[in-house]
Amino acid sequence: MKRFVCVLGVALMMASGVAAQAMQTTISGGEDGVQVTPPTEQARDEESSVYDKRVGGLVWLEATAGPSRFNVTQFRNLGFIPPEIASQIPSLVVRGPEFGAALKFLAGSTTIGGHFKKADYQPFDLITVGLAFGFLIRAVPYVHPTIKLGLNYYTTTGGLAVPGFETLLTNVRTNGGGISTGLGLRIPIVKWISIAADFDYSIIGLAVRGNETITGGPITGGTAGTAIAGTFALTVHLGS
Image 1 (cartoon, rainbow, N blue to C red):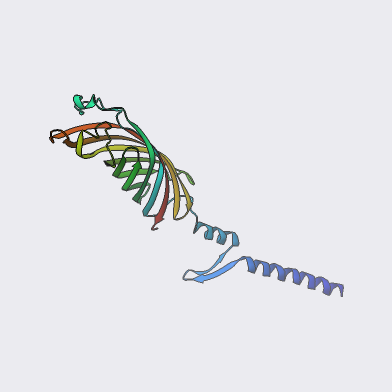
Image 2 (cartoon, rainbow, N blue to C red):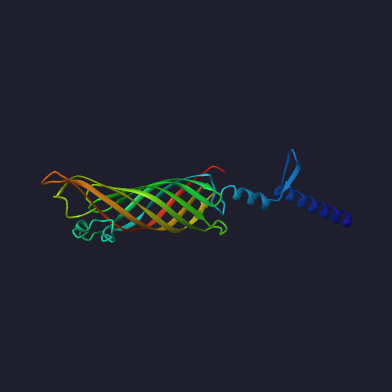
């Protein structure tokens, strides 16, 4: 009787072990035959399908926002600005929020794409349309350092970028160009979403054209300066 009880106990233990192993292991069949997936590997596969420690995708859709500062007249004494105009340009430093959007394409560790930004300064708004090139150090997982270079076209709305001339000029048109550089960090959240924080430095030259209010004759002037901005981005990654 004791021998029977011992044999029965061993049999129950073996059966429970087999049952537990069957509950924890996934068996699947396919063209390559039968595959047995341990529970830890299966959970890891499910997690990696949602989260990736390196950003990917082929197409990036991005929304940006952050504070910005523009020293409009920092370079007003450069040679390409007429001296008679430069001497009359008052000093002007403006601050305000900057919002934007971008469409980028990823090839390896390089991004290329276009962006649109609007900085809400006083007494004017600065519109930026440009082409940007970026490089990600994807060898660093979870937090990718980034480097950017942008070529931009600028124009203003809502007021004059050169203060003090509001009553002297009509039909004012202000536009120009410049370059921007940036450093930042990008963090993947899930496989198709990441966030980024960047610091951008821009050199901007603006040409001001209009007509005199007294004679109605044309007048052309210019100003240039530097802008700095702290940008926060939310990016959606599309494609494999």
